[in-house]
Length: 309
Image 1 (cartoon, one colour):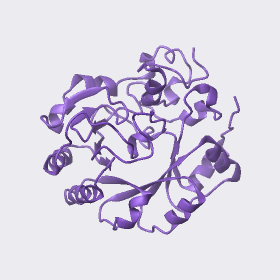
Image 2: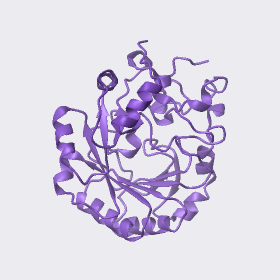
Image 3: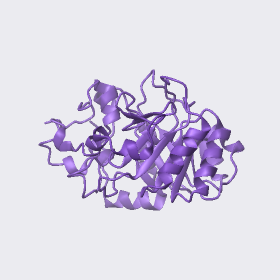
């Protein structure tokens, strides 16, 4: 396997390039304490480039816009607002609004959340829709776009966006490292994974590297996260559609947080994954259970690890 050597020099490059996160959610280095930290609220079926039917192989697809099947009618606007209001009464501080069908509804819900003074509101908007999105007080607008020269020029002109979620192939990321590309805005790099390890040219150990002292006790990725899909099903992760923990059409945020299944997933550490449990790198290695599940059909699968023990 062709490795990409990442040293302290490249870490400095990331800082200078304003790269917030590579191939993992921005919260994986955050210390977790077994409490709610964020709500990811999906507004609709979605109209992103990646579909549940074909498999969503994005490394940060959890905060992006995708296309899902809804099992029943979506919640109405008032139910979304009620859940946002309940969330504002918790100690959590991050709200992600994503996977929209109706841009106007997304904007209204973001404005409503802002009126409740939620600390960090992230509205993830496809670049194709940004010409209809105004600057919004108290709302961090994250623009989702494929990595190419045309989109980079369009992004540079958006002086009111918070950051960009850039979807790219492995070769694009290698080019960024090689050329020392510096972005004029904050960036989350979303790597498109191949279907198997055989197609992965990057070093997955380096892509997964984290610094989180609580990874011994909590999942760096799942812990503190509650997802509510547009049809009301509460999930452990936006991409893990079969792992339902409750029904937000009938239950409020506090009731959902009492679910034992949700808390168990927050505590899903590498010690519980057989192939990872004896690995010396297990506590400094983030991995996406959603990607592994899509590749293997097994929640504890290990398709993308070259060091499987």
